[in-house]
Length: 113
Length: 116
Image (tube, rainbow over all chains, first blue to last red):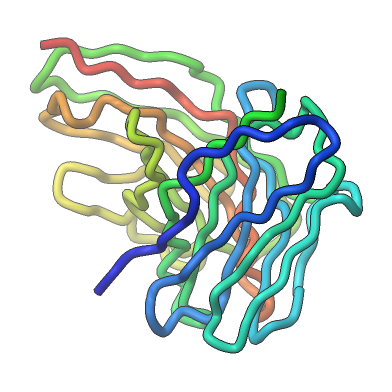
């Protein structure tokens, strides 16, 4: 079974631009969560989607948004990029109700210059 | 809100030795799950072990085991017969047990180095 796939692996963007990151969950997993990892703030929860609906949201500004498609694939978008948005963005998928834990992709390294 | 604390930023141990990583958490929930994740230099977060709070028995996965003390809100990870491949960041994580929640709250991590 394929794992969680995130694309692209690396991105360099300029301040003010917007970016879209993609995540394909493990087959059968309908919950997709996004996390931001930085050296200063550690791992912070962005949001979680289930059945195309956002169920939980972390404490991030409205510039951060996401969506989930009917095949459970998810995208997250960051608009008006700031230097502080430079981070590793991790996507995790889980089988709701099994409580086996979340399975992570390899992340997208975003650098804002 | 839940908080997870890992008080050991870095640890190192000789290959084949045993090492214990500490984690404490704070919550008002009575039902929850606890996890240890490993993040090697490749950045892939790998689930190491999980513990359900209602189970008194400590979870074990091969060389990895936990010491779960619910009253003390402590959840330490023991790695036996450590191997070079165990070198990684280790994160302790908390998840509330209720349908509709898949959010993980992470600690700040412990950087573990296995010395040959």
